[in-house]
Length: 159
Image (tube, rainbow, N blue to C red; front, side, top):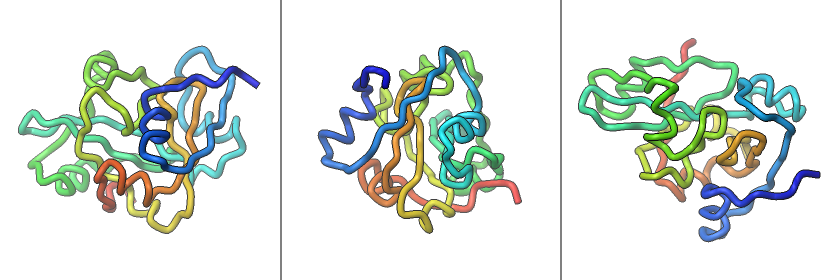
């Protein structure tokens, strides 16, 4: 097993006394969330990706959706009270969040952005999100995550 690395996300969960499990996988560069779920034998509907968008107002937002789904930009904008949102360019992810593409998580970013989690997570006891670096996944309660970062749940994926 790979040496456990404490990321900002893991430090936050420890400090907040939120129960979680870590899953480590071998990977040197970005792979998509579906591939990560398959690699770890995680159900795709329980494995969520973190997307960062910028609203028309200039405010940044985080959206967590199942890895096989696509963000509904209109629904996402409505969920945060914006006229529109657009995903930030890949080249800006590290500067905005402090994380790299494929390791981005809503926990422990440079600044805590308003976060919306797809409503399907409310039905799950546990789900998987990135652990703050490529090769690390965190398995935790969506409700505990939402409470700790003041996230909300909404229907934000394409049908």
